[in-house]
Length: 394
Image 1: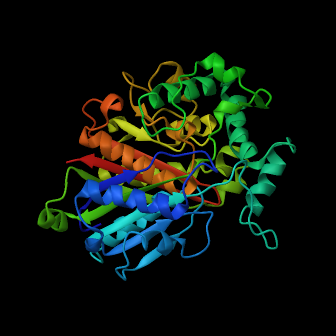
Image 2: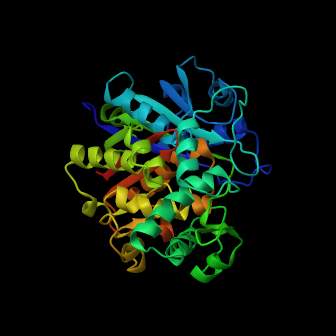
């Protein structure tokens, strides 16, 4: 990385339930306008755009941006499952860091349908073939939707190895609700207790209740990334810098370990985090605030360990001691996370970015993590890809 990269503008729209949103074009254009307004520039200064989404036809990125402007710039459509938004950010940062461009837009959106995620193309091999086969071998519960079997299975493996209790996952969900109560753009803002989480409908006996899973939502989020020189020339905010970033994909261990935690990307996340810590010369103990991929409370728990926020096997103690919230070691998901905002696939990574930029600017209002200087983002998609990004207050 030779050029410093700053995030000078962020914007997102409130996420909504499937069927209640505007079209993906309207959502994406609005998030882009908000990010441009936050940066204080017009669209004509954007030199490239990376646009992420999962459930839309090809060139939906152009279609969304043409509502903002038709400037002829390169627009690249990005599709990387749940890590799509931060994959767009990864490419935008890479373009600026390499000197290929000075000002780049990363945009992510999703217009989702209700219910569990499923394949669109039924007439060809699924990218999940190997993941599904591994899951069938490791998890008996054939009647349960696959996403639940993946992440519930990972949580179950942790329970079996370390004696982790179902109530610990409920504690994580209750913590998310307390954080979300202070977030005007979270979909679910009602505070729920650990007991209330446990009392919601059982999705998998002994392993998961309904509130431990994030719902599908629709939404959009965007970021303007630029070089120091561009920011200075145009008078843009230079208070938040991307200090390090890494993206990983699966290695043989995902399947060879015969462990559901590996199937859902534990080593992939750990390797991305280690690369980031190494590149930045910091350790997990230096991080003040984290937005991590809590598609299920179970994934939040194993991610604490993958990111090095606590020792492997130490996640339950980390939760019970309150080290994952205000007053503890590190505030995790001050936005309320995916559990509270829902998970519009393409938008999630850029919504995480938006939250952390606001935290480092000191503009997060009631969610503000006092004195936040280093912020870590973790966004993971099965199939697979993981992006870990470290932001620094300059």
